[in-house]
Image (cartoon, rainbow, N blue to C red; front, side, top):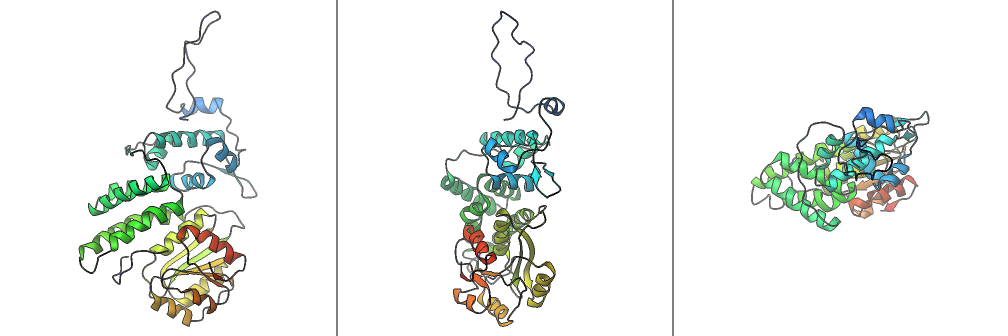
Length: 347
């Protein structure tokens, strides 16, 4: 859950029209052209069942898009419109399957994720071209280069497009671990020698922050495990914490995000009121982590995850039920599982 470390605050296309030249008896059928645009809504709904009977796993199987990505597209773009049962389960319709196939095809053709989603939902949008990339490593390198150029030029539109494309091409943990956080670290290097670096770092952080905050939104059925996330009092750097919260949401957790500079007493009261499954506290700097531990906080949940460079592995011994996350941010979901299961120590 790292972020740049310095003392300055910064804060298919589905379907096709019926062919009017369909073959008559004794006549050869004319070949049909491959369609690239969705049927008009009134025609599509005539031929396609509108009953919500599909679980998300079936949508994933039929489209080849992972469940995590489907959920992300639902949260970010409203691409899917599930029906909720009385038991809180999401059920999807055939039209949702069509939308996912359409979205995937447009991404393959080089559209950005936002433009593709708007296109599928029939909203006007400017198409942002993407250069084809082969695998995850190539994608990460391509995206890093584009994002760094956008930040250097203070080009908000280009930076937003790259962040959007990053989340479309990569799962949330990989997007953060392989592209976004590395760019933030690189952008923040050398701030002591060149104050202009701070401006670029602020620009990059403020580009990423609202995107991560939107990832935390969602509708959660009763019984969903919850996470209360905060940075200790005095700690103004909370982007790493926000990134960790986004990973938690991607793993199926509901997150209550308090953010930076949270007094211990306020965190304890919030935990008593919300009764989260796990409390997560992250700090960039040791002095704020030490002050938090010195307060000897007590949480009714008993499960605490500490993270960020400010906390050390030995700190798990100072707070009952605590786990110190020492791995990559992509491994945070596993640490949260350990904490929820009642383990303690280093994750």
